[in-house]
Length: 269
Ligand SMILES: Cc1cc2nc3c(=O)[nH]c(=O)nc-3n(C[C@H](O)[C@H](O)[C@H](O)COP(=O)(O)OP(=O)(O)OC[C@H]3O[C@@H](n4cnc5c(N)ncnc54)[C@H](O)[C@@H]3O)c2cc1C
Image (tube, rainbow, N blue to C red; front, top):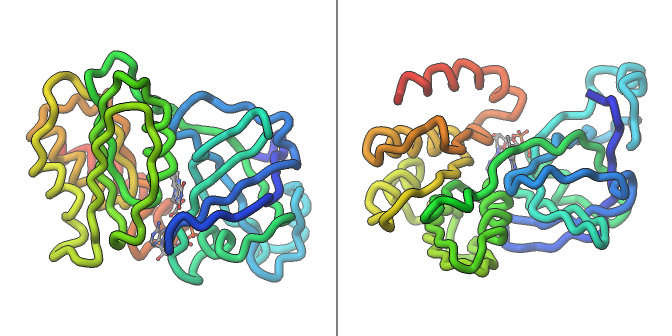
């Protein structure tokens, strides 16, 4: 897990919306960072609880000595952009109140703060042979959706559905391609949990073969997965669909039940 320690320092924090902060990281071990080419590439970052005597970079022995209450909490975050020229790693963090570790860390982050991580993992990249691309999720997937749209060639076409609180939470998603982004506002929705699947189910899809990227809140993703398989004939073995987080669950609680959730989801379709 700690075979090669990687870490970086906060260079700056860029507010993108009232609930999204882009944190730019430089220095540390980034001179040796090896990107994997995926547009959903993610790192497994380790957030230290307040008051922890552990400092970055740390070893498993450091953590053991500090005791369980001070152990770093692992959280996965998508690389929105890796700039090899400046060796800068940028990550879009959802801030969701003063709960948990990662969102709260981003909210407090200031230049010089350090973050230790493993990775990158991830494997999706828009298929160059697809006629068009379907992308969907909530704010937590905006890093991957944004990186995917940015990677598209000018002749490519994409349809994206993104759930955010309201209009103030919509952000720029630059792309050279023909992109139609449908922003969905949970604050004014009758049923925020079915907003994503209802919008996708009600949409007229462009003609041709499409590839699929759907990530975000577990129940929302699961409903979309079921719809795509049963109503749109999507071959799930070729689709990139997975739950990033679960409403009301901390990441630790979610990981405890995720395996069973995934097994039950397989029975949907
Ligand atoms: C591969 C992968 C990539 C990911 N990429 C990103 C990314 O780029 N940006 C990003 O922000 N998240 C991303 N996530 C999701 C992120 O890891 C989780 O949201 C994580 O739970 C946040 O940790 P926390 O310590 O802030 O909150 P936790 O301690 O896990 O949870 C505390 C409370 O906050 C709630 N909560 C957690 N996340 C959210 C949210 N997004 N919105 C509202 N409430 C929330 C929980 O349900 C819980 O009630 C990714 C997840 C995966 C698996």
